[in-house]
Length: 560
Image (tube, rainbow, N blue to C red; front, side):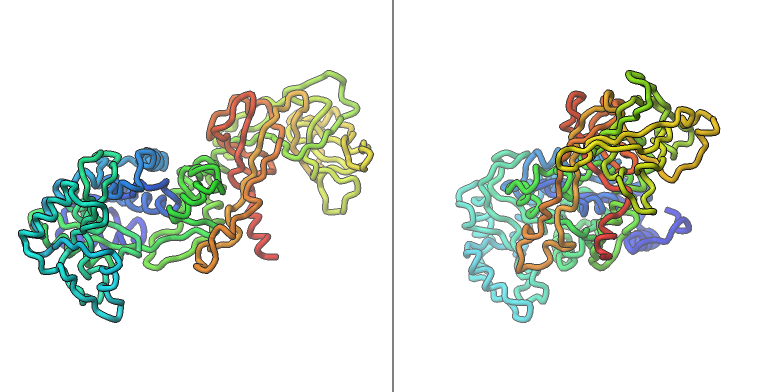
């Protein structure tokens, strides 16, 4: 990696220092180690971008390793979803690994620790062990089983493995220091009994390793050079190193754990437990609900891999936890979609516009540009007729001077079409406008080159031809929580902050070109925002999700 190209974050500085101190560049290897007990969220996306980004920058392999040590919470569905998310973000792993690949080796090493007098079997209750742990200011007290003989420990541990004891009756603990100022070092549990079916090993095992025992040893077995964790694992580093000390062979690479801060996102929760709660209690439609902070939810909403990678790059890596405003993520999404999303016309709050002097039964197919950001401009055909839908807010019967859309007696341009002038309205018995009547300037067709077509008017509005319009279900999403930190106050249930207006489903009308659109196709509905095709969509029933608006409307609300 060239240090001249950019300033290095502190993780990269650590790696560069290790290389200077003799670590061979070909020994660099990273990993992303999710637990398959839920879908990945935006916090995982940052960790994915960090680890795989380092792999790209240093031309080093990156493993995808599943921390599948708790069969009571883990499912193959989550494994498949995680793989799908990592691939969708644009990354490829070198080896697909599982902690369960190493169950036998981990067991064998645990036997070695028992033989060395550094681990013992305890049959106290969890409540008794918790009391003996002490407090951060008071040392713990030894378990009465701490000095059980090696022979008895080996016998009990094997019988635990063989399934002779019920859940919770015995554990294997490391024998370290019950007076350590780091409470994680006070004889931590290495194995617990769980009679549960494992998604890969079936019923082969009745004991399962704890995270702290499995994680560092898995890193070692895979020869990971730098094991990157979030900041809450900083106190675990001492234990990570203690376990490695007892199995390390100096001829191999010794993994180094280093920690970076979580980048929490405003107006979201990223606890998998809380996300699961939202799913199970049906506050959302599933893990991939477009309001969720999961990668699957963001994908379905229409966020792009490039926008999420750019967001991760923008927020960077830090040593202190920080709350990132979700508006920054939305900005990254908007910026990417502006480059790639075709512009189309859709009307979401329609009112009928009749061009009274347009020939009855006539239709034209007009040229419309697809995306002004394209290097080589491309066009599509849109139909035009006597009767159109326009947005209700684009017309005012009596308008103030700064209203530059359609009013009676004034002119606006219909996008890609003609200049029209408001003439009259039709109202129902309640006084609501049901039709707007206008006339058009026949010589003002966009792109025709006539003098009339080059005439300047103050406003341009979008429209769709009623005979050609396709009805669409449009799902307007807003932030799932009204509070920027919904789970910060431990006295308040985070669900109290669920936004009751986070989803509004409306019927709109779109131009006919969208009938052939496919799932996750992105579009800018002109003057309305960015939308994508939902997986529920079909040619006979189009469904679109609002991805993000053209502007940050929440910023305006917060300023009021």
